[in-house]
Image (cartoon, rainbow, N blue to C red; front, side, top):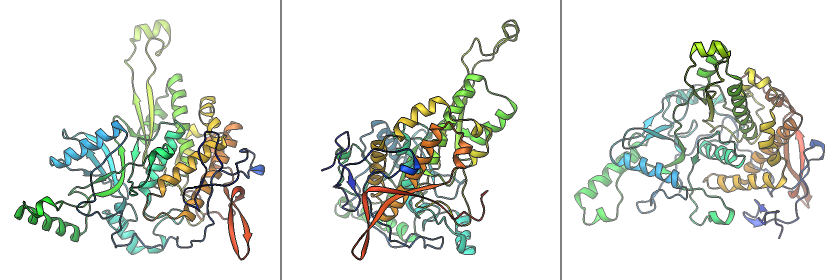
Length: 476
């Protein structure tokens, strides 16, 4: 059995968790020599994805529906996160219901505690932009009036909640700390988090403000009537209320505003030297995260900045000493990356739109990667074992979705490996974020071998290729 340096067995996605075969070889940063084993995989043979792919089916799956005795509540190993979700459940029971966020294209909700304070953001799976219970009329009009352009053909539909949690996982593995903590559903009861030092806790919430079908609401009313009418019989065996929804739950960040708001202010009022350096560091962490997960929806309105000012300096003291920031600490600045639900594509955009990173047009994107970001990220990305662990953890996370497809996941990891390869090279050469996004996009996929009449993927060797086809529009 082949083990990594830490004694962790390699995962073969074909055998779904069985140890892989040959030992891995060193991880090369040179694109010409990149053919190393990171994790096992399978050959893609699914052609069901396109912009015309139908929405999530109306049939209720095991993940979307729960029997009256199946749902046992939310349980977590993370004490902080558990307390937040427990407070949200108590607030819902007390009648303080989640509030729908009217911005954006998906059904997302501010979750509050019993005092009415916002403590989290919940995004149900079936209310995602292309889910069948999406409450936004704009997406409905889009589907009816322009079905040929409905969806993003580089993304797997209705897995945005997994993308949110995957971005949080990448953020934690790289110690970037720019993504608010997010958790998702776990539907496999036999999953053992201790085996791989990774957990996927259950997050299910039910609220009257969520978007349910008429059938679900009628069924909930019938249950309520039956339990009230026969409390000693049905009341002991039937759980009344609407069915809980599965989705991603992200902790609410307080004191942050849209990046666009602060960026406009920074244009008119320059930052102090220490604060500007700190902002560059925070900004470049956001760049690393977005590039690795290939976020297709990063505008300046869906990442946040928190700017904490310091007390003003007395003008007389300022004039004598000639500096505003010699007597007080420089203002502190923080960055938060939210709305990561449209990431982890299984191919680079090559149809109508390019879905560019909008931060690439900012002045900060023209500055080379600083030494601090290289010291933080480069040693991990250049380590083959780290990349292997990252892809394995993403596999354990994504496979919890009912519609998980191993071949599509392998294609997602092919894009991710290529992004890591480019980012590693850019960090070593001290390029800027703008130069990074201008590099040719790379796909690092598993080497295929012929086995009789079949073509199989070899688990210990990779090949790289460059995308030849470009999107029609490169600016949107």
